[in-house]
Image: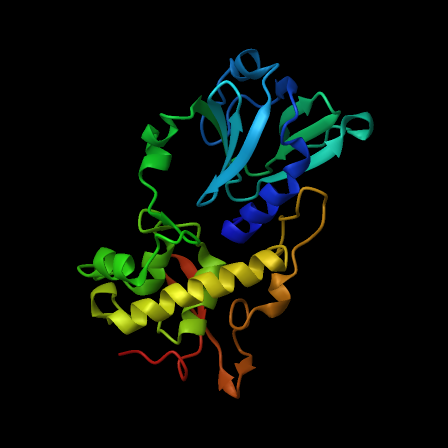
Length: 273
């Protein structure tokens, strides 16, 4: 699943369509995770794209009519930005937005777990999938005090907590393992057992790992590519993820299953309390 670094890289690749006008939206698949609103094109044709923002893993296209188009890449989704003159529809292209500058913004999603929606800018955060989000993982409002408060009564392991978008928005399975290794925190540690210093270390590692991943263009393991088709490179910098059976600093890396998800860690460095 594309996580915050992949979504942020995608947004940066969409800069060419800022201040462009939407001339047409075609929906080729009426239902992904949810039904795509049928009137999307009718409402937004002729409207200028003012800015593109991100909240967690959600992409927000803010338009001049005070509406926002909302996109979530789901498990395997990706956005391609192409010249309409050379665009040819591919399998799993579900949504195509054309601009007055001959840009084609194409949403491709083989597994159909993505989301395309819209709403008034001032009310989109009333939508359940946005209203439930915690602090964005790269927001300055994500402090160690906030994290400590949110997890103070949680008996769930910290790895699972990092994946909870209601606590922190943007972190997925790959980066959770990398963050905990960087912070030297065992994925088994219960939230309520973490000290303020450990919470501080986690927040520092969140910013460090995610920013490095963004610089590297995200991580490509299978489906993800940026808007121009470029693969990410942060997978070359993984310390523990997908490295079970290997060693780091002479210490073995182990793979376990937590809540149905793979966790990679180094027991000799990330010591369980």
